[in-house]
Picture 1 (cartoon, protein in one colour):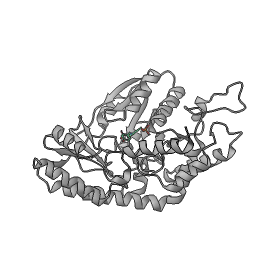
Picture 2 (cartoon, protein in one colour):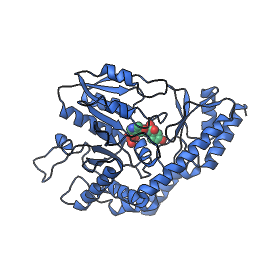
Picture 3 (spheres, protein in one colour):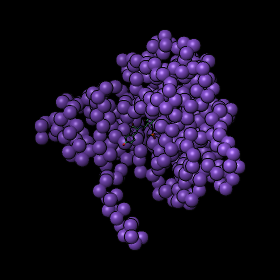
Picture 4 (tube, protein in one colour):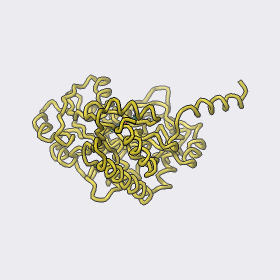
Length: 370
Ligand code: 0PR
């Protein structure tokens, strides 16, 4: 096929799927990346972060990114790497935990945890002891306390659950984990809470947190694929080190070849936005979240499941199944969570006030039977 035809064909296929700027994608945790971040990806598109001998520049960029995370998460001694996303981050964390303590098999996991924790447990033959949720959909601290035993390999908490954006009681769990690996999945909330006023602490200043998943390709506003896994102690990643005989370098990552482009785009995005930029983004998303909640409160037949901790809102709507299908028919990308019986809206930067007004208008019409 001719190059022009290939590009045209791709553009045609792409045009059939929605764009964030259409104002209809309201349940995704990603957003439109900056043009210059795409450019940054292109500059490094022929590089592989696996081979530090050929591409030491990529290694340098990655180190600078990890150091930046060290600043926002309050520990300059951390180690980590850019993953393909939150799933790999969670797998890597539990893999390290297992290597640190091979005799233990049980992990305590709140029922609201992302499914990648279950995936990791299945991969590594770990046993999940499910932690129930309290009335606010948070991991029940009493249940964790009663379940911790000499079998416990790790405790997992989520800072920004996938369905309702709930922050588990990280500080309280931290105080129970003196001798137990504590992993915080902040894939979503990790780019929200450090930039929010009066937010609960989820960072390495809590001395028992061993690892944190935090994803640039979610609220970090970077392009996919770019997650991150961070470890408190520089010795941790060495536990999963492999040194193949035919290579002149070793590797400490779950994935093999890794995109240097992804690392360059993260470097570009965090350096462009910086602390103040992310603070502005989070402030606006939270303002829009509160706006959405106020609009919901005005309408009979709509209810916010719980006051949001961050920019994720669960909405109860009368006759949810019908309402959900009607919204989808009207072109909305929205998700329905069977556990909480609610629709999920993630108030990402592209979910602006006009988008929210349109959504509310459609919900009103659907409730009125139109
Ligand atoms: N941990 C948490 C708390 C998550 O919400 C997610 C992603 C992950 C880990 C895994 O991250 P990766 O998908 O990067 O491996 N959860 C998203 C979600 O459930 C996945 C998603 C993304 C779903 C876009 C829909 C969508 O349009 O919301």
